[in-house]
Length: 233
Image 1 (cartoon, rainbow, N blue to C red):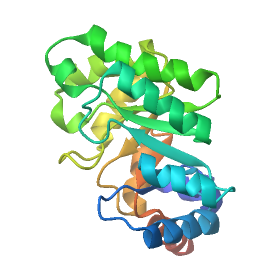
Image 2 (image 1 turned 30 degrees about the vertical axis):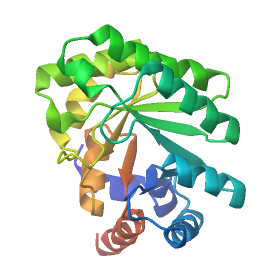
Image 3 (image 1 turned 180 degrees about the vertical axis):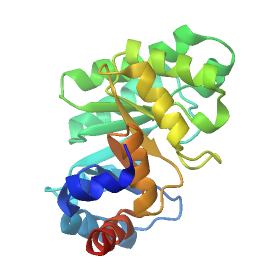
């Protein structure tokens, strides 16, 4: 589908509802958190993606915000037990979604059972809370064969989304990768595109390729640019 067709099919609110508004820079402050919450409320984003610390702070201070917290972010360096324990703490506090990085070293070593164990440990914790689990496979570090294998593992482990990148390790979301992941997961899971998505045209192109969610720290800019694109069509 040509992304321009989405200018007819989507409005600002429906586009915003597909965006995970992200605040994960290590330098982020509590003032940045307050600003991100204000933006979340103003635009109606799908969720606000935060570090575990900021997630716990936000859950205490802002009751109306749907929070997504990250696990093993951004390197994927965590054991199944550690990931499970952190997931439970966050879920008990009220987190609604979890974005975890798969164990990249285990994957590169061909220890796929370990990778699946780590994902499944988080998925099992999330089940009783009705929470979503999105797994980052870090496409920028994988060839196409590895992307296919990683996507299969994520689906087999029961996660709800395969996510492209953290945006911290040099990778970026591409139309090719989104379409490839979508061809693997089909209707068994959804696709989240993340990494280097800064403009409305990029977001719309990725949605056209099969992305169900967009992860970005520039959600407000994307919605504003979308508004201008609609006006100029």
